[in-house]
Length: 434
Image 1: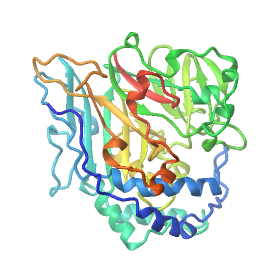
Image 2: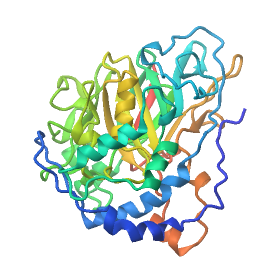
Image 3: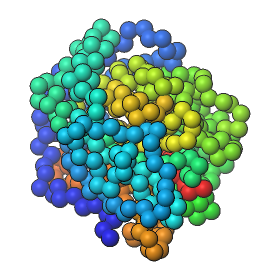
């Protein structure tokens, strides 16, 4: 069985860099937010943000694939259907290979155990109108930001044809999620990759290998997902986003930012800090405003004035949960404004969602399916996992061009999920079998 996806993109160029750089003046108008009913402050764009967006815009299209052809193995045992979160398709749309009647693909990873996967274009979903999604976004931004949000005709066509979600969902009675801070937010000034290393660990905690890598003692891995923004990219009113490590507060949480928290009992919750139970938190991380908050679209997160506002092809990743806590999931998107995926995830019956990161840094790997009688492979063994997000090395052929080196800052921009074997500077979410 071929578990690793190969992408024949070597012939694609980075010519779009020049075009996109030339349009920055019109597409990167500063955001001037009107007063919002939030107390943690909405940020505005800076020159540094504009520079970062150049490669983001260029690389996004290279990661788009009409069908990622994820490996499919049919369960040979009875399993629970994801009926409460059914994916409803238009009559003309085709279900994913291996999908059951709910529209989800059950992924068996050992006898009696599955998680669920799906990849669909938003235009294939029932009761979804891309025209209405765009109209809502255009209307929402009028008066909130200078320049509004008005995609060109070609950009609107791309939304209709290429807006896509790639999703995995884990039942929490079989799996648990855990936040790992990595080393950057602990060992660098302000917890940022752009600042100088410190001679100590922030917050006065003792550094452990378990902050940046997984181990067999934690349980069998079922998924690894890139975490949040660079720390200083989410500053609110002069304060860093919240971070708690091993029950110790490194950066005090802000009331209204989206928060993922792991508790002593092994459960994980996603909400705002203002709504989360405070007792028993072991690990916690914040990032931006919630996109969905308590089953409701949250304007500040779904229609943000920074990073995600513009009509472009930037990829984005999110973590989400069901209101009853029975499911936790991850979704990454192409050609999809945050408000688009927020509305879709609400239609799927999930209640809370937070932004994790933006392309090209995001990355994710998941456990490969196992057929009846096939030995269960270790996650890191050959064939034991595969990239949910295409690997940069499979998508982009850098060569030695000057443009490529400038675009990537002399290094790969993507977080490779396999890096946690030796320890990673980036924060991430690990999902383990219970």
